[in-house]
Image (tube, rainbow, N blue to C red; front, top):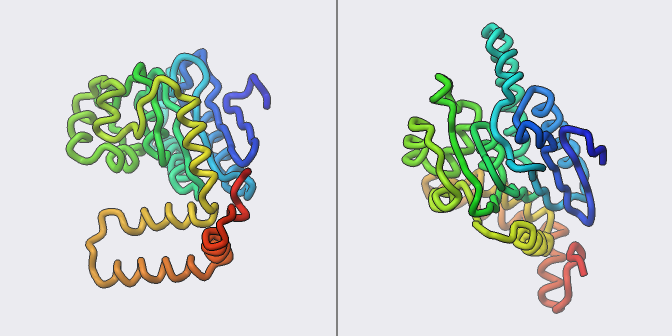
Length: 261
């Protein structure tokens, strides 16, 4: 790893740890950081040895939103330049959201504006009691448009109406209550390590199919089409090599081939 890089990527034992590394600006976004994150997510997705992703931030904050110098540059942009800029951020978040392997946000300190999008786009968010959240865009005369699909999915429409409009700061306990955090803990790394062990016990192909299942089933009516789709999905995975290996391992009282000793 290059310690001076804006993004650090470490791969070890099936786990990719991606760390925002701009502690001097509280890991604020700029166009370069967004591009580096997107490229890193693509790199991780294409690496078949990676089974779990941890997204973290160095320094006192997870991510404090937009970088001031980037905002100054954006102030002089026209519509087309702003559209290209926004598409880059939206594309990066979509890439994170679509990752086939489980993703964990390691949350501490400030999580403002675009930083909340990173947290919400991860499958699991583990935070400390000191973490603070804010969807601050309204106070700048802006809208949290690009992060909205992930944040609304995490906290629900009712809470989004409050926090998008008031732009108030809320604490980690409130983030846990409304769904922005999955787990609140004083021991971030111990808690995440325990989660990683659980995730590594599952079949990697099953994990990808489960994530796709959730996207397909969430908020859909339980009608004949959905019933048929879910039956098709379980039949397909039962006859897959990984499904057959998992069932055989269970019946033979042994660990499946993907499990780590």
